[in-house]
Image 1: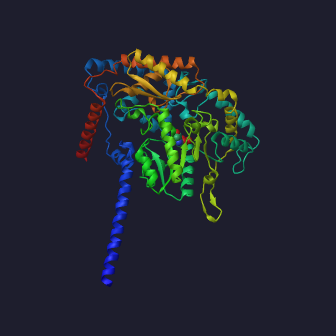
Image 2 (image 1 turned 30 degrees about the horizontal axis):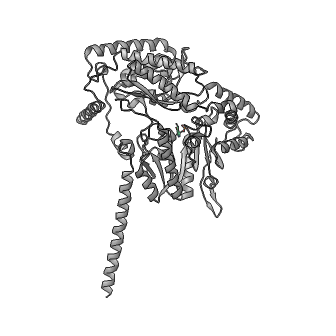
Image 3 (image 1 turned 120 degrees about the vertical axis):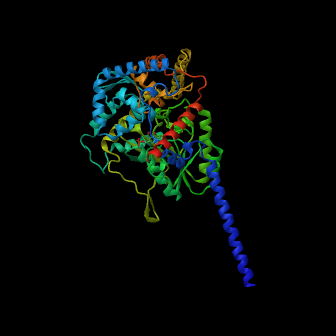
Length: 558
Ligand SMILES: Cc1ncc(COP(=O)(O)O)c(C=O)c1O
């Protein structure tokens, strides 16, 4: 009898264990299904594969004909390249020489210098088309380098510059004067912080605010708060979305360690909603609304522009619908919905992405422009989520302090920014904002198409991406033709054009003229020569073969 009871108990336990493992396996499968099919959707695999990519580069002969172009086209390219190189070396002489000197000891410059173009072309480009990293002044929508060349600025200072550089010169100068008497005293606050907090609460529609040094720190704090209050471990980020360089939000390439508490899921996906509905370990969902421009694709850069597959299209209605559904699931499951508006806040609408898409978040991070030109990160949130300690458990706290948080000079520049931002003049800028920028994008696209140039732009308001309409290995060359035409881009090249909102029609037309002239010159120099048999797929296959060959070769060598 006792034997039978024991057997039954063991069988019962076995059945329970089996059911639990089946359930765990099922949940795992659901997680896999909710990953985006691309490599960016599989962070661990991407990291592992990145370790296998061998370095190799093209010599000068292959550089001009890596797509199998005939000799006359390669010659055309060589001549155009030499002309461009001469122009760079004479026109940008001082800027280039000072930058080369600085790069010897500034690791950031070495990195950005290396990752402007695909690595196979890097050596020849750097030898003949060196770029300057110095500027001496800014004015209106232009910046001027050390040689006195003026460029239309499309770098947007990584997104900080929403209203034009003169606007921020004013906020910094006037702000500094207002806190001069206190100076850089930290720990205690300057009273301006009270007004800042009130204005940010008004803009975000949320209850409390905390100040940090950068967007990365703001995101870290928002996620930490979500984990603290939900007592759950995992954050969900969407495939391709950038949220700063903190490890947990960068689980793939770029992070030396794998992350263990991050799920990278597909955006705009039913499978993702299912995972959110059914898992119990998810503390928060992090949304970067900029991804509406290219859901599930990583922030583009010209250093990976080896073919013409980069695509972009902003469907506001579809993205809004997705955010609404996300909101609903998060509310049902008590998952904290975080909008990371470090980049898009103040760019799309006076109330940021929450207003633009008509969806409210539980926590919002701001950064970049809200510092009035000085370094900043801000977290805003519901009162219950912002609290950093528990009344009934005094030792259970969520620590987040930083030496420079709420620095008087930053608070003062921010105060100037917020006051100006809320004036009718600045608010009026947002009226018809999308219509203005959509119209400009359409006008440029029409011109490019009429000229038979294989280039088009896609936009989310004044944030633009350049896309290429015909398979080519050389699209990254356009950034060098644009610079020759007096257009300044950031180190990601044509992947991101960031216009400040003070661009007038005349300013924009000048940029459009230069853009068309640059693309025409590039076409005339033969870079877009096209073998009809070439497709993006054949380009990718050829590059894969090169990599495998180099990998095998370097193995044999060791
Ligand atoms: C959406 C988003 N979040 C966070 C960050 C990180 O901000 P920071 O560079 O100030 O650390 C960025 C920076 O580009 C961003 O675009």
